[in-house]
View (cartoon, rainbow, N blue to C red):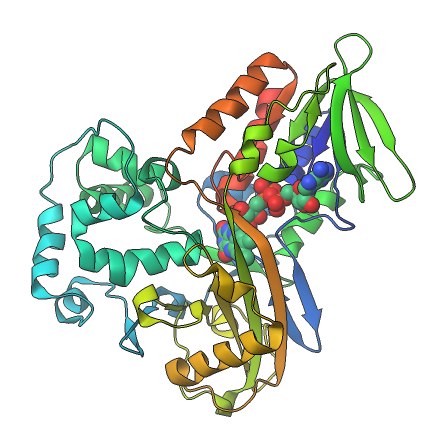
Length: 452
Ligand SMILES: Cc1cc2nc3c(=O)[nH]c(=O)nc-3n(C[C@H](O)[C@H](O)[C@H](O)COP(=O)(O)OP(=O)(O)OC[C@H]3O[C@@H](n4cnc5c(N)ncnc54)[C@H](O)[C@@H]3O)c2cc1C
């Protein structure tokens, strides 16, 4: 079968690699001059900077096998054991997130009342809600307002750059939603899941990983395992019209002029706004136009390098998350050179700060110099980073991550209806199947299975 894959991010490339491995002929059409989508590693003057994602959870055996099959086993890096230390900011200082029962009782993050509520959560009974609720409501119900404000909203800022009052618990955190329905308690479900992983010979929590050359190693390996000429860059797909017989005619714009080709099936692993403007079928309708309403908030990331002696904090952890009540410009901070080796030159440290998101989008859009000053001021207060960074890299994501907000089901229904109306068209990626890299890898594999 000849398959067009629209979008050369991790989802599209995974689908292409799986389909090619199953003997199909694939052509990846990618609008940008490079493949990889959100994954973009740059190496400059001895610094290794990730413009987008920095790491991912090796959440399943399928992902482990994929890493091995791509020949990346020797390149894989597991995050430093220090990464288990996670910090939250409270009253301008970094406070360790409680990892074990001992630390839980002594942490200043939560009042005694909240601690009791957290313990009592384990006694909740299964619950089926009549409709979806926001993540904020869901967390308040289970753990109380303090946990939401001091831990969960910052965590959501770190993952979705989202707003817990608007994100849908059911679609943004489907495993928690399911856990509530099945057992009632998130804590009990978490313990059971960790036990099940251990019983299956896996570590209790999935390892956080990257590669020696950064995350681009993954998308580059996927692309390089395809037959030569399978990836067409600068190909901005605009229309999927009828071809000969039951085939599709895919048309795209390219700097050299319009291009087109006929395919037996089409896989779309595109952002919502690109799906929204796709003309599909003989009449050039835009059946996915409703996806133009999917919200994305802007995020700016600043990769900052300092000489080791400029930073007084030991940087002995994954990073720090900042509650919005702290009124900082920084949403969250990764201790990049602690997480993986080779991120900073000898004698230096690298930090990655994220700003903006759904709660303070205007911060991400600030001029680079002003943003740098604000973030450096935060870093001085939070981790004792004195003076100017010796290296900095600024990346603005105007539309970073799709927000699975309340009512998102209408977008999922639109996609399902479109697939039902146009057999041979398959839609996946972070608009539909989850936003994390493991979700996207799974989505690419699922797309390939459905096509086959
Ligand atoms: C700043 C940031 C940090 C993140 N951090 C993490 C993290 O640490 N860990 C984690 O697990 N996840 C993280 N994520 C989420 C994760 O990176 C994404 O959800 C994932 O990479 C999306 O992959 P995708 O292939 O579905 O989409 P994309 O990567 O968006 O790929 C879609 C591709 O389609 C192309 N395209 C668009 N329109 C067209 C068109 N008309 N024709 C052809 N091609 C087109 C685009 O150029 C793009 O290459 C982060 C995301 C961002 C933005």
